[in-house]
Image (cartoon, rainbow, N blue to C red; front, side):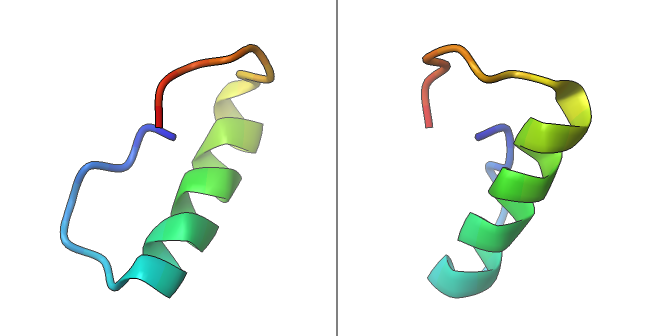
Length: 31
């Protein structure tokens, strides 16, 4: 995902998934 900020792991994962969907990046981009 694109989130490299200090979320707790659960919320960071959720935020990354939402950003990945928002930016339309289904390809194997680094997490």
